[in-house]
Length: 517
Figure (spheres, rainbow, N blue to C red):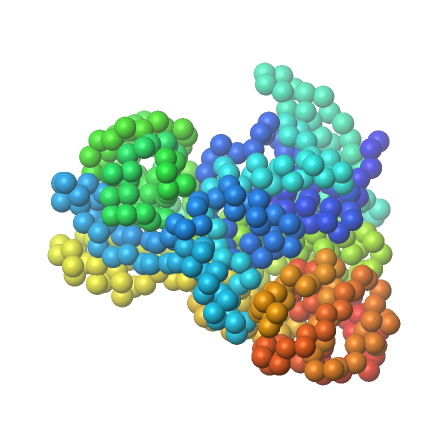
């Protein structure tokens, strides 16, 4: 029987990020994905700044940006009556957001720890998955297999025995057993891993019915009627510009009582846009939105991440982005355990860290959806376009401005403002990002494992001498940024969250015991 330290069920962005994280930290893994190839469905369309920070540490940021929307294109969200300007269509209000190039300049100019290291990225999951796939397929520490499904597993005190099946069209493929130390279920909303663990879901299933049409069209005179925008929105749905050139996705709400299985995607597109236009429909399907959270994130040696652990309405773009942080948190803790650095409590802290974040993000997604519902009601009762635009502006667009959700989540039980991000080095918080006086980013000086930041001539030797795990030491000789880090010694985890801070350290062993449990 083949043995691998970690078996990952599910080859979406979360599973592939977990594989990349483990490999970067020296751990072999096997990834299996039941589908024969990467997804044809667009799913997510925003990779937020926090996820891009994590991808940068994994050496993937530039490769992902090469597949994304051009960096000079904006992230604007525009509310309209229809796109057909020649038939009375109006733009009601536009929430304006900078392009990647403008955001980079803003990050450099606002060097006070309040910004992400990386700007967000507009990209479809159709584009992001092949980039991640190429990264792990080329890694000797990753055995990645598409067209192979996890069918079942059992676990004991020493490991997990998984049954895998080759998925073949029209027949049952061959099965094999794999022994692993740990199993990670990154296998989506209908997770087999979660089901076999007997873990239920809390929250609301089937919150609303939606109909998705992914299509190709060169009709930019219509589809960009009011200029380039990331989203064009009405009371009936959202048009997502996947590449600002020829690929688009409409997410719409079918009218009450509609038999969605009999919907004509071409008729839906014409009605939403306001007039007929040429296109090629690539994929269309009805689906349901959910607001669900797994009751537990782990059972024994088996863990859940991504949609297997949480499912959100897409407002806010929290689904995949929450899953990326799940993967990095779980990845370094599995690696530390397998390399012998960690105590028995470190893996238990995965659920303690990530499940509260999963709940907070589910609640934020629900709040954003409520705002969209309120805007839909405004369309029904306000006929004057200018008055309607003013009301939309007053309600705001927190779903794309919740920096506290994106950057401010913490692992110490403290919940800050969901919109406003307040940088801190309190243990459990994300390390604030700044640029040093030589122009380099502090984040780019962090090591792959732990990093000890030393400010103001503090003595780092007790922590260095006692370190049971790989440790990089960075002397930060920059008085301009030192106050943002709130202590003379700051110990940073592999996921760039703060592990410990202090102005001095008398007992390095005690600090490391607390960090690695």
